[in-house]
Image 1 (tube, rainbow, N blue to C red):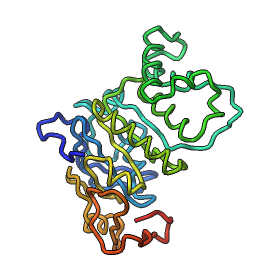
Image 2: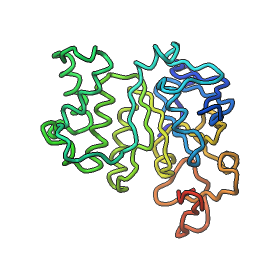
Image 3: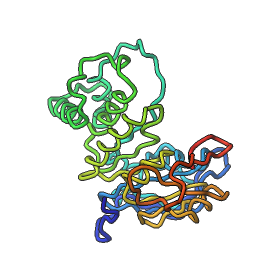
Image 4: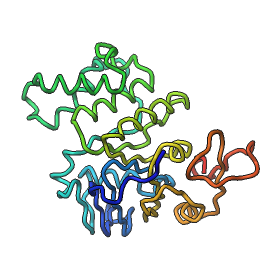
Length: 274
């Protein structure tokens, strides 16, 4: 994949000197981020490093204590309508009586007063979104009967139903097996032909294979709008020595090594591959 996305592309996310946290304690410090149209940004970092906090700021769920944040050139409260959000795949009440169609149609709620009826335009957008993620045939199935990979595709459809310019994804393949994860990343790669994507992930193989630009976040953001993930960036983010290991097909962002059968190193704090 071409790691460039055109320096002349318009800026769709602008973050400058961002500080944000909870109960007076900063989680993000002096973060700068510029995301251009049609970029596919992958951000990695340790648990508690501020990845989800950044998403909450971009969605307008958390107010910064300092700094400037704009979406599509607008303040967050106006610009967030251009964002579709895909959360982590979490457990839920599987006997709750809701159909796949109804879950995907929730993506249209932001366009309506709560009591307003859905329109034919809404239904058309939902149908297109389900078809785009290859889930239209599941539309009448109870959501609780779906597999993890199918549920995640429906969550992506829900985000697409709002007809966004930007997709934000928080660990989109958590609890999904590697084969299904690959199909989800291939779907995101296709969507990136028309939608800007910012993805939080611990999945190094995805970061190395699918994204166009990559960065690390641990209170501060180490991001230069480039497609290379260097040992220096990782050590700054994780604050410990890091070995980069490549497996399988060639990757763009990992250094080559002499031990193809070596196991990935693990961080003792949370067990994620580094």
